[in-house]
Image (cartoon, rainbow, N blue to C red; front, side, top):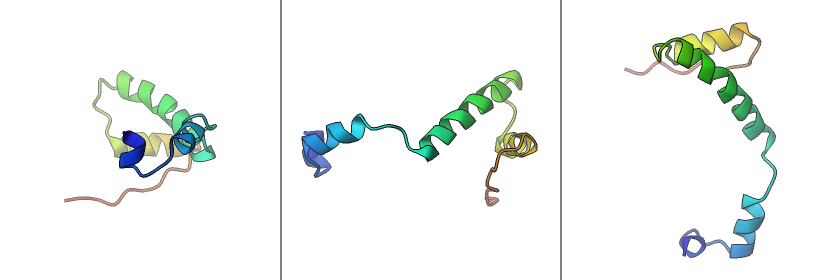
Length: 69
């Protein structure tokens, strides 16, 4: 039913679900693994600006986010 809703074949879906993670997905997983302990140690008080700054200082290439109002 989901494949029909997404207009994809079942064979394509199973090929996609069993694929290796892309380089971007692998990088995101590593970044998530580094961020989680920082957030936990801070008691959940570190926001994205602080985490991004800490990751940049650790050598990660982290994009700057646009400020929102």
